[in-house]
Image (cartoon, rainbow, N blue to C red; front, side):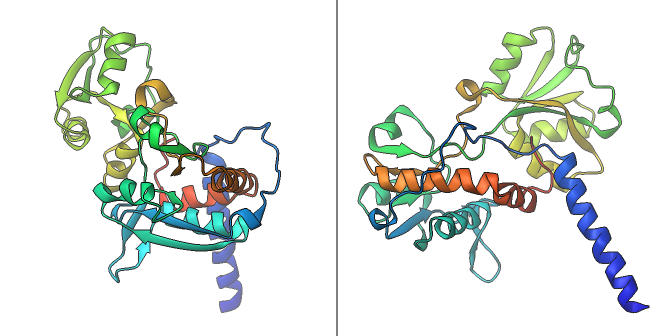
Length: 273
């Protein structure tokens, strides 16, 4: 009887995971025309990843001091896919890029911005996670949300953000209420001081994970790389083509075999896509 009950619970749990994977939109940034050409592993005997340890859930230390997170798991899976030795070393954020430039690592997986200044020093892998903008409403208002009917609605935004500029351009009849950061803007929706929030979906997902009884994403995700940033990619020293090629090849493989989806669902229980 106990074994039957245990099996039933296991099947229920597996069913829930399958449902989550089906019901929740998943990232898809892999070029469908990308060719799976195995990189020459003799040119990349190992990958020395650099990261930081202060950006949960991407890269941080747990209570035991172990380095964990989405980026940490991704780095390990990349090395496993390419079948090369792998090390991951944490640096203070303000020193990590300099460490890569000084050849103290082969790749930096820590959300380095793909800016013109960084582009002069580093090359970047394919994007593995974009950062869309999204609306958040109180849970009771989510079903009735209509982005074409926001005239007169009070929308909480981070002051000076690209998301504020987006609303001013595309939804000029909405009333914008400015806040110093996303947390304060989301709290305004929770307290009914604002009708809804618009901003960085990833940061909003962290807040929603702690406030599921209050609020939820509403409507679709808005992908605007030129406005909201090009997303997350892995930096390598300029000209380090074998390493970049190996990483890009692994990212295609990890998306196609479901590993990227698995990591996304594990580390972002409130998905932001």
